[in-house]
Amino acid sequence: MKIYINYQGINKFPEKIERQLKKDLQNAFKLLNIKKKILSLTFVSNEEILKLNQRYLFRPYPTNVLAFPVEEGQNMLFLGDVVISVEKAEEEACLYGLNFYSYLLSLCFHGLLHLLGHDHEKGVYSPWLMLRNEINLMEKIYPDPEVLKFLRRREYMPAKLAVNVDHVATVREARKTYYPDPVHAAVLAELGGADGIVVHLRLDRRHIKERDVRLIREIIKTKLILEMAIDKDLIKFAKEVKPYQVTLVPERPEEITTEGGIELEDRVEEVKKVVKELNKSGIKVSLFINPDEKALELAKKTGAQIVELHTGMYADAEEEEKRLSELTRLENAARFAKDLGFIVHAGHGLNYENIGPVAAIPEIEEFSIGHSIVSRAIFVGLKEAVREMKELILRARS
Ligand code: PXP
Image 1 (tube, rainbow, N blue to C red):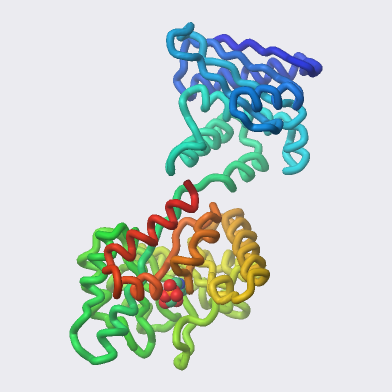
Image 2 (cartoon, rainbow, N blue to C red):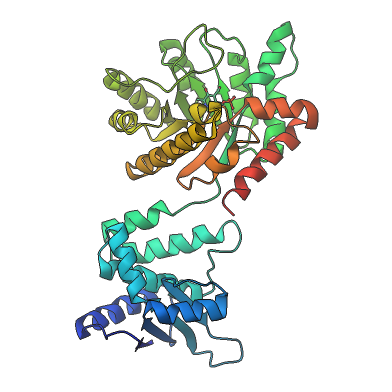
């Protein structure tokens, strides 16, 4: 592999840095299984990159990295040019509090992946795939924890949708009949694209019953998520049915629906025991909590794998200012939770109007939505109602 380093409008890097860059890039070629190719790497000023960005991408501002793959018919040994603005890289490294060399290297990898055909501006999965490759190269070649943390924050796929079918059972229980059956609803939700089915087995069994949980567990092809309060009999039942995941929620007998996140103050040890017991039966545990750093830190002590951030305050906000501040609170909590190592989910009160901004939060991997989907299903059918919600979630990140 040959690497040519050029400079335009800026001072050359010291020899030591050039040598390190070439060594790290050679390692990247090995990992990517690229042989006998030529790469040109050009370091420029903001002024130079602005000219290129304007001329080739019609973007009137300086950027950090541009990649110009070799065009078909040209020398196929030549991979192409990666152009990096050193000024921009310095500005950004300083802004994000990152080591300059590590960040510069991550930009070189970014450019190289573009030359190999990756494109983070196309489609739903390609941004994720490209970033996964960037992270992989940094992990193996230059594992600076701060840059890795920075890159992982941008790592995302479209979020998944877990559909809560409780309210199909609510309609059934309104007349104490045997229909509509939440088991049928689970199948239709899956046909509409649901990635999981959620049921809340409440202490008063006001909608979902044990029979529903057992049959849904047996029949669905995706995953069953059992929501429940911390209760001895419910834990026993969960261990018997073995859903994919249990979401622990607080429950107040008179409430219409779950009102807030689980209060962990003074309960960490108790919850920790429950998490351990369910994990031992192969069940993942999620805690439904308010989007606060304090609550997340306590949740971490319980050993739970997942947190579901309560989106109710965002959904209920009537004024724009409040809605935006609740959205920011969710964004910060999602980032904080991901940095703590949690898988991040969110839910409660989400509907077709308010899902967009939260679905764009990259750290959230799954949404749990029930009432709005079942309500819409009355008019358009459940399969279609799920499909429409799924599309809004997908669109938020494409
Ligand atoms: N997540 C949790 C923990 C819940 O308790 C509920 C309500 O059952 C939901 C999500 C779904 O909320 P909604 O029905 O408002 O979509």
